[in-house]
Each structure stands twice: as structure tokens, then as C-alpha cells.
Length: 261
Image (cartoon, rainbow, N blue to C red; front, side, top):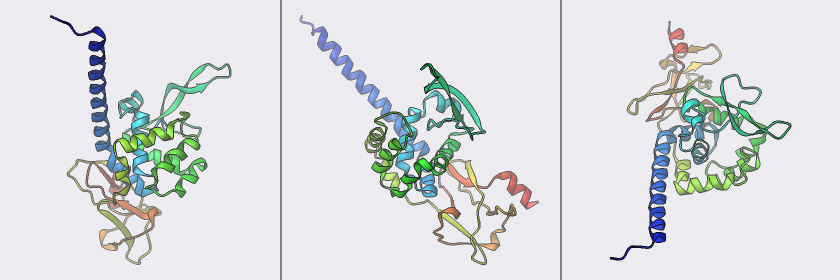
């Protein structure tokens, strides 16, 4: 009876192990995309940042949502504290060094939920001058967004842009850049003047659809439904998006309760 060479056995084992690892990685990516694609699409329509870029960054920075930063502190984008940050934070070693060249722990932002991390990621890019040039690209132009993030210094990884593009094309994330706003709801006052809606993200069940109550952010009073009409507004600032899945955009509960009393 002949036996297979040891080298053949090892190569076969390595092949099957790599296949199993690839399948597990693909499953993790698909789960992550299904979990967060809705809020990525909504944030795209709020800001112009491609949903594909947001999802690719989330996958890359959080290791498919399984990194300690993501599971314990809900940080999906590797955003550090910076001087103006007043929220939760945690420390871990990354790429900061002291004056002697020793690696030191860096301060990272912490959040109460992954949704907060997604919203803060949008705000982080929108509020910083270094990323301003990116918003000149269309929200379907993911290659320029990916390379642009690298050039603007989002990460120190010299292949950051190409890594994002690889993820986008491997998992076909680009298709989410073409998604329309699901169940768009736009509100204007009865005199046709636009309202500045003060809203935030809240988590609901998959089946539930919320109907947001408009709030005048100046008076902080709820506007009765009878005094507003739905219209197809084009002003992105005044958009209020209703999602048909887990992530719904609703008003802050305390403000609604106070204004209706």
C-alpha cells in the first residue's frame, strides 16, 4: 500500500484551510454589509459620501465588526479623539510615538452604538478642511474617494485607497451608491418655508416604520402634522429620511414629549 507524500498532504491541508478561511471571511463581510448598508445609504444621501466607501472603511477598520474597538466601544472607523472630542474614549496602541520613538497608546472615540459611529464618521469627514476636496467627487465615484482618503491622510497605510477599492469590488459595494432614498419624507411649513428638522437616529425592529414628527429647531416645539405638507424638496439640509429596515430617523423622544405637553 502506497502513501501520499508528506508534501502533498501539507499542501492539501493548507488549501482546505485557506478555503475555509475565505468562506468565513466572506460570511463575515456579508453579515456586516446586511447589518449596516441601510445607514450607510442614508448617510450617503445626507452627506454625499458614497455608501460603498463608508461600508468598505467600516469593514477594513473594524475587521468586519469583530475588532475590540468595534465590539466593546462601537468604533467602526478608527477615529481618534482629537482635541475637540468630549464624548467617550478608550486607549490602544496604534501609530503614535513619543519623542524617543517609543510606541504609545492612542486615544480613540467610543460610542453608545454602531449607529453613532456611522453618523460621527460622516460628520468627521464633513467638518474637516483636509477632506473638503473629496466632496467635489460624485457619490458614485468610489475610486477617487478611496484614493482621496489616502492622500488626505485618513490612514497611514500606504495602500489604504487600493484596499478600499478591492473591498468595494470584491463585495460589489458600489451597487449601494446607486440606491435611492427609501420612503423619502420631506417637510415644509404650510407657508412653503422650509423647516430645519432636528432629528437623530433611533434603532427599531425590521418591520417597524416610524413617522417622524417635525420639530422647529429654533423654538424646539413640535409642528403639528396638519401644518406641514410632504413635498419633493431638493435641499439636502432639510431632508428627513425614513428607512424601511432597522435604522429609522426619528426625533429625540424627550423633546417630542416636552413639546406635546
